[in-house]
Image (cartoon, each protein chain N blue to C red):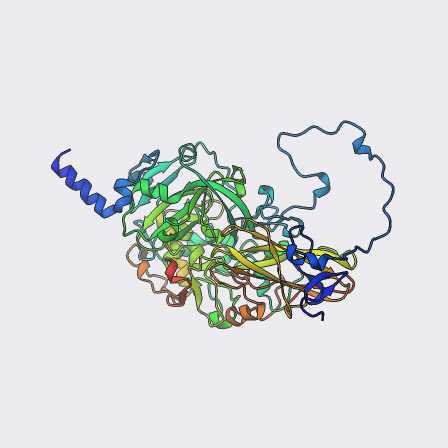
Length: 438
Length: 178
């Protein structure tokens, strides 16, 4: 084990075990470690081949299409589907986090869960009604809402069943997409819900808003008025364009930091009430069992979480040397304040760099330079938010929330809900990456 | 404005808070009456608010289930490849954190059954059952779970009074957020 702050690899500062380097080791602005860079030299690989013009640089290229799609060489960068034949049940499409980078999820790859298929909604016919404990029930159209004062904000949306395979008592071998693909992050643009509630005039007796979608299930969830009047939004645009059908076209409820299912898609009705509806989704699916047989009700929050996307299961190590460890951190409680990274299974930690700006209730991209010595390593990330919450280790999490008694074999199953512990990727001397518990 | 109207406006402002009387918004929402919202206003609350007229028993519900529900949920709610989970029974909730949840071992309120059957079933033809059929199917599902008798009449008055076995099995996770 290398000692903390030891100089290694030709003078670059090693700050934690198994080759983790200072987070600013390769940044131009890293004055703090400039001294450590003195005398740094790369060990060069074999000389590159001589350069020549390639065929695509010697003729007219293809037409620029009205709606562009990724290069044909990126065909494998797609969502994975749980119900590709649209059988009469729910369907999940998971974001390929291990093949993406940055903090925004492209709209074509935003995760999507639909409990009764995708409704084909005509935006001119769609209506949103606000009623119940209001002075005047009101109906809004896409056109009328589009004339309201708008705001844009970054926000992640996460299914509360995301990462559920990690409830397994044995680590399942799966990509970050399979484990954590039910979370995505976008810039959402829309109208503050409080503006519309003000216009309808709400009775102080109203403590809940029942939000309902225009899909076949008319899926409904109860939202506290506290949240509705805080930062709730009627989302109309996603990363600059109208919502994708799978993300709620033409309008959805956006409740930053709250469990995905509450962010009701295809939103058509908001009813203000004194009590909650105790709907199927809040009364069954999203009330998660605890080891003593009791169940949490109204969990709401997606708590602080992080996971490493590079390197991770499904990717290959290409020999010893320099790698950037990179991943995603987020919290429904606010901003990510700190991410620590370990290469020795949590024995020693190095602080990762956070990509600025770090938005509240949104993805923060963390990065940490690492020199892999070619030996066994266990990579972990652990996040903190600015409300002071720490992401639990798996041992800490399981002690409270439990795990399955038998290994989970169906990766598409949801043994339970609201899993947010540390993820560990074990790297072998052969460069193979496995999901491990450490 | 008459004195009566002024008083009424003042009372309304008190009741509905400052948001109602003072908020400046573009006011592009179109007024609608609760009567015109009725077709969408289908949520049934745990105290029974929202339950429609009508009634049904488990005996009647067995016929509804066989015709409308068993194609997916199997004969007697035993499950089928389309919807494998049985609709009754279930292990004690202390059996593990992944114990399958059923009406009998998990649901806190009988109204959840009525509400979900009415809004979402049959899966390929939601909201096509009559209120009597929904009451009967609900009675049948409760009977399958040994919660009501086969001739107990379920209606807007009796259904919310059915006490579910796991009624008190829940902990509010973040009470300060409500």
